[in-house]
Image 1 (spheres, rainbow, N blue to C red):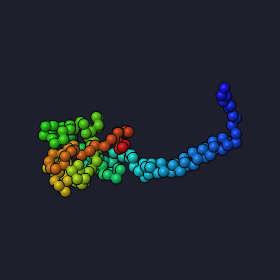
Image 2: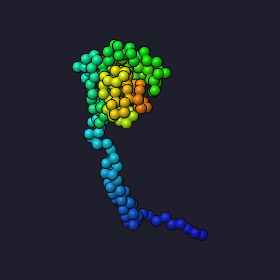
Image 3: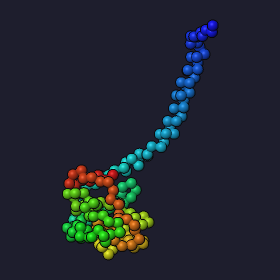
Length: 174
């Protein structure tokens, strides 16, 4: 008859467990800095979103702010610019997008776009070109008063970033 004897834990068992615990803590202490260094830099986090006071921008005026290292065009459009943008038939556009899709409801006079040409990343010039919107002099892309591509090699409209109105005179981009 075979008997199994159950032995009580001894000093050797304790040393195995203690060595394993110290090894696990040491591995975690080595891995933590490697994982932590993959987090974004504090300066990057600071640029994640910006707030902009709109109260000083007059009707018909544009301002450019820097967000995530890119220029952002903020334009307070005139009533005629808004009407022009709404009157454009979508079938005439290379990248069909209505004016209402590019602005926030109730704040149609404000147009917020990333100021980088979608062709090769140049910076378009405001209030220029065939459509009185933006013109990229590098390769001849023309954007209208809603930032939509109308003529030239750019494949898409100027990009509208995520933004929200915190009040009537304050927006948060990002």
